[in-house]
Length: 470
Ligand code: G3I
Image 1 (cartoon, protein in one colour):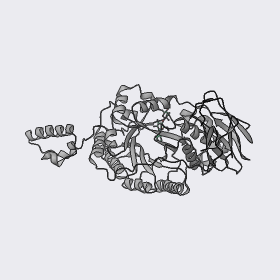
Image 2: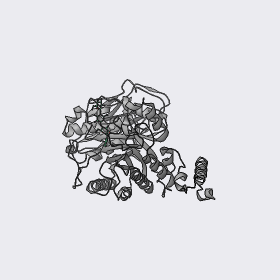
Image 3: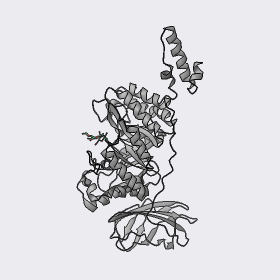
Image 4: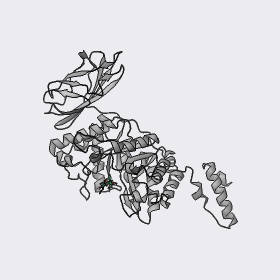
């Protein structure tokens, strides 16, 4: 009789209920079956996965030697975010010198454990390396876009969602952009970053991420207007992150705010959740329920594992105590994930498609094929080139010749040397990509300044052979 009232629970939970009820009856106590019955899945990740969502945590490479930490991470979470290791100061400490050591410790751990990865964050006015803090204008713009291109290219295929731009809107009532050196490069810096990220990793969802945007307020409305404009103009944005650093409760219109963004045609993600205060367990449940109630809410990330790992020192805003024990907030999240019938279940997200600004022109056939993607902003552009060997034998050592349209001047490039920087350019292989097996490809690219002409080269010749265009 009791079992027919709770048909969906796992047998293990049924046994728990049987024992609990038997014990309670023996003691003459009335029990609420619903509380015990909710534990259909035993971990946060598995419980979230029931509705196709993830439950993640921000983690630090420096803590991966801590067995208590790693045991909780491996057991409970099916998504991770690097708390600091993918930020600009960590990944490009000197201009053009990239260091992915700590980021890779996180990426490799996540991949080894079958967890998805949120990339955080390609551009942010904080945690910029010292050299970039000294730049301004087009020099900073070029450096920033190059950073986006390089980092997103490096991690291509491994990132579920990138925070492409973080915290670019101002607090207070205006709903406008925050002043920063990045903002002073021109209001289009955010869309330039999104276009560069799409060109570099077409499979990653591209998010804008911010804080104090958890309810409907001037700041979140400013972001809402930007997203609406981006969608209208075809700027590639897929998701909005709501950090949700909260105290005691979520705003009463938290779910409505998520829903209004979802209604613009983007996914929403709760990206840095932590909640302090005595109402913590209820507030965590409310946030979890709101995500479950919004079809396009992909998942929740908490900003740390144990209270002792939190950036909010002394506020104990997380789901595990300093010893790694589950807190009441943990149980309330797990029960909410298990007990709420997600309705509707999340919409499967189509793989984002790149939006190149150039329509490729098919050329004559040949032993090579070139795919060329160009993203331009007011005075600069980024070009990504994939060279495919369509012949039947390997190419060993290559040079790709193309005419750069007038007014375009290459300022930096990757995976090839480029000479000269304008006019008839020859891109030559570097030491590690000189051999292209039959059917294989190499990816190269460059940044360039332009004076208004943002067209693409009309033809490409590889080792003297004209390439077809993809
Ligand atoms: O690693 C150095 C260490 O070598 C040095 O001895 C120590 C001295 O202060 O600093 C350590 O670096 C600190 C780093 O965290 C790693 O612990 C930085 O000082 C500190 O500023 C940095 O704080 C991070 C903060 O972003 C930077 O603004 C926090 O860990 C991180 O949780 C926090 O995360 C941000 C999100 O990226 C964006 N949203 C807000 C969120 C909270 O501020």
